[in-house]
Amino acid sequence: MDLQGIRDYCTNVLDYDATSNPTYLKQLDGLIADAYDRVWSEKPWTFAQKDYQVLARKDDVVTIGATNGSVNLTHTGDLIVDQMDGQIIEIGGIEYTIAYVRNGTLAYLTTPFQGTTGSYTDAKVVYRFLDLPAGSQMIMNVAHRSNSITPEDPGMAFALTRYEDEYYNLPLGETGVPQNWIPQDPVTIPAPINPDGVATIVTAPGKGVRTIEIAMANEWAGRSSGLSKAKTVSLSDTQEVTLTPTLIPNSTGLYRVYYVRSPDLGLMAWRKVTDTAGVTAVNPVGGVTLTPDTSTTFLTSQTYALTYPRYQGDGGMRERIRMHPRQAEDTHFTIRHITRPTPMVEDTDTPDIPAAHRVIIAYKTLIPLLMKSDNPSESALYEKRADQELIKMEKRYLIAAARRIVIGDFSVAGANRFNRYGNLRQVP
Image (cartoon, rainbow, N blue to C red):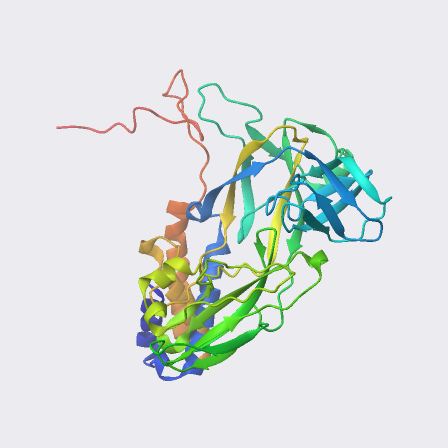
């Protein structure tokens, strides 16, 4: 059952075609999205848990040049583009945050340098925090897994609360083999208000008459903000859109990206614009004009879906954790976490819920819809159906106690003991 299937189910029960009224269709999709999120977050479902691989890097000692009162840093290749964006850098005993590394000679801080102007050969880039993936809702486990027969340290890391971190006053500068993980403040990326620099140019015929919507987002250190307001652009057969973001302060570190969609062509999902030259993001300096392909032929092709990544709606907030002690060597960690469900936007989008239970989204959608239609008895019926479906899901997809074979007397019953022989049964 895809998004259109859920709409059809609700339409059949209500005996009203939602597609005949765009306003009602938008409200219906909103109720479906709300029901989807509530079912997903109702329990810690096993199908909602994913493994995420992250590299915890050791500290890097770098040589940089800094000027008092300036955010500019000079270097000779010690600072790495993208990798060090948003990381902490310790200069002269004071910690700063790297806004972004522009190239092999220039980088910028988020706040002006307060020390003495000069060259620092002992500056240190500190990888203190680990970002969780966009849409992460809850951490279930953090562990260092390996392919070797003999387990490697640290294995599973144990969770500490912020209170325990503060109570024991765990030193931030201690390095070694990480044994614990601690939740930290999330990072929030501000969204732009309007898409900047949207213009049109004349091209050769063949683009097709179309109307598209363009939105803008900010990205920093691999994290995306929410989307700006959308701008509607109507294009003729001989027109193409150009995108030129304006200059912003280097201390923001924000890269600008654009998203496009075309409801008139049935394309409801926002997708990140890729320039014909392959450029997707523009740094704070600007001075770059993106010229994407928005022809009807391209937008309606399968290549469009593969070339323009889809916006996942993470809303600009990214959760983070801190390992203790901080890793003294590059270490790969596997983070098992509960994700946010993939939003359903296109008619053919399907929920991330197992196929046998997707009808529960329709049941939960109908509860408020029938109340709005002044039919409380029918609403109560679908609430009961949703509860029954939820019980079925709990039996199949809720976290169960770990089971393992115990060497010894398997006849002894136990809540967490596995019986290798199974239940006895009479045979003919």
